[in-house]
Length: 597
Image (cartoon, rainbow, N blue to C red; front, side):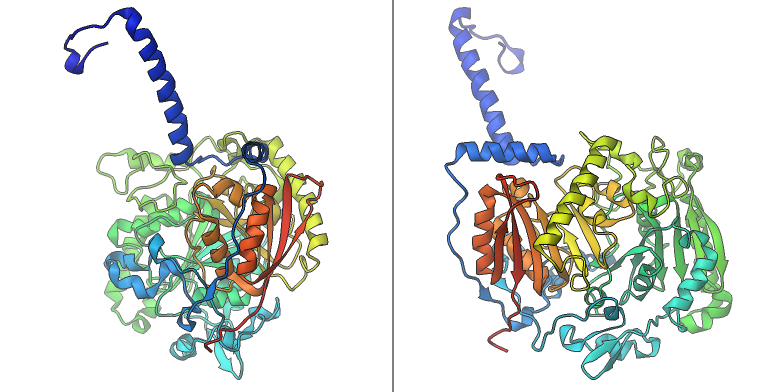
């Protein structure tokens, strides 16, 4: 051994240091394993077999299931009826205005978390059922008049008596959203033959565009921030249309790269060419090769429209030229254009990106080591994410059309450690059996009584795939600490998002009819306190909504105890194979009203 700076010192006898070195080695190894178990979150999803091993390990070290004392939660004040913890307008003043940073996710610290039950609005009723809900909802469920008053001339919605009605209007579709989408389909034939399956609508309004596409077999994530429009996303979810709170600002959107078949912006007022085009670079990242970007509104059709846009024709022409130049530099090409709608297509040929190798070219290729799919609190990068050329079936022209793609093992399954096409097929079959069993436990699953569904910790989206013929949609959530399986979900033609369940989800209260949980507490209890996860589930679950919680026996009783404090009714059921190591909790959230109302 040598001392600091390799300076020689008094060397102990060889025989006297053998034991200390051996002891030190054992201690260091033990300490590393101990600290690793505490501080290192496994970023690769534990497979079904690993979950079983984890449960066995837990049960071998304890005499029985985890014990939790009975708990009772107070009601939150009525002014928290639409509380969104991580996008709370009351906390906006703490954050900067640059690029609307304050509208991004800013979750409260642990000491400021609410430990109370969010009350529904006075007069809340069970939501109108799909498909009728697409066109109307109860006013008292979303009691906001701002959009109705400010957007009345655009026919987003109108209030009549106890209901809001959604005529399908919008800034760029005065003749109704269906006529607008018909025109779009004429420009993009792939919207009619199963080529285009997934879409994202940035600045979605009340999600009429996404709602219309549902009838055409295209599943859309409608995205809007919590802003002065008050409740765009809440209106969308009340209607039964997929939506989440979000904004393209300084952080990547919580989606994988190369996933959506189409992206859309209808006068969403995003400054696409500002800040070096960084917002459009994010659209490029999440759009599949061969996918379409659709823009309607300024500066499209500026020669005819500039007067109505409160600008000059010279300014609009300049904006349009800047947009074309930026898109060309990102390897987009103009695919089709008519009147107020322009369609660009992201290239499927990686050779185009060689132009970015020229020195001082902007935007450059991303070469900073950031993973293309890293998207949970990952800063936007002013560079182009080039698709991996090894994925031969990634482009929109190569991936199977809908619905065939639902049950085909995607090309990107090989990127996931421990995964394979065979594993994918086994998972697909397993979930068919599980969902068939779920329907015996919860008879309304598959009926019009359940519309908005969340799979809180999916793997390949098997739960959602097994429900594809039912009148519902599923938001597939992949933990930001799990293996990155979300690209596989999108390659199947399903939708989802990354999330960390130690935090609140990006949605309003009372927006899901059914929450599905598979071993979430077994996998994440070392990081996330069970009480707060269940309080968050209660926040986003609709009154009279259900939760299907599949857990190890070690956690099942504790979950049931906390659920009772949430005013849920829970029943313990056996799994489809009678496995004693797992139990299924079938829970229902009661409808109650605030005592202070």
